[in-house]
Amino acid sequence: MEPLSDQCAASYLEYLRACKPTEPTLDYLDRLIKVHLERVTFENLDVLLERRVSLDAEAVFGKVTGRGRGGYCFELNSLFGRLLRALGYSLSLRAARLRLTTPDDSAKRTRLSHMVLLVELADGDRYIVDVGMATCGLHRALPVAGDATPFRVRILDALNTFEVAVPTGDGGWKAFYVVEPYDLDWLDFGTLHWYSSTHPDSSMRRLLLVGRRSPRGDGCWLRLMNDRFVRWSPTGGVVDRRVMKDENEILEILRDEFGLNLSAADDEAPLRIRLRELLENLRLGQNLFLKKLLWPEV
Image 1 (cartoon, helix red, strand yellow):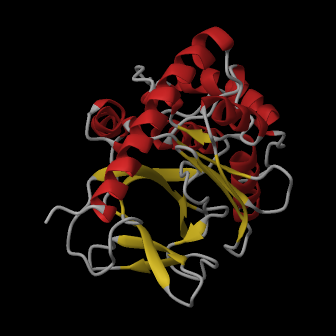
Image 2 (image 1 turned 45 degrees about the vertical axis):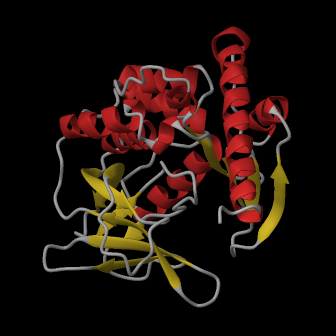
């Protein structure tokens, strides 16, 4: 994966409203992650619309900085990784298995479906960097060894498989994802991206998922999953929770809360149709669930 050109890196930093670092330090990396999460939204709109999603650097760069859109993990983490390399950071690419919806005591292995960056600083310390998640943002570089508060990173085996966990609020932890112990070439992620963006079983094709760190500077995390919007405080408490009644409210919140620039012809019109279909399917599923709950077959 090649770094961004000097011109593109400068334009990207300008878009993020960030200055170029004098050297690749941890402090600058943490600040850049924060502004990126506040400025660039995780969103799977193109995947939901069954469009071909290109991972070419020029395409992702133009989508974000030129069109005011976001992207999903393979788009955002690859673009951020290209920027970091242009700024002098040393990094490798790792694949991860999402575990947030899987019981911790389950032996079931989930599919490789996520990409993270493993950044190594001049002192040899390594950090997990991820700007491509919707559920909650890793708003700092997480040390592989050391204090990762408010998150937890632990090594699971002799191969150095990493587990990233989030606090549950009751003193416990929930595994967020497990990072594979080996580096991958950039071309290897083409297969993972193909599955996530085109396979009928991929959740990215069956639900709307949008996430962003609040640009208000309050540290809140915003997430929209289908018709459910939630704003979490930095401590994990729910500040705001809303259910969107129709596609118009979803489009409005995509603009107002997530800052997405949706072209009327290219984005809004087809998205309106897809969202209406998505909401109808959701309500049909809810009605079937209630029917089975209230009138179970004898």
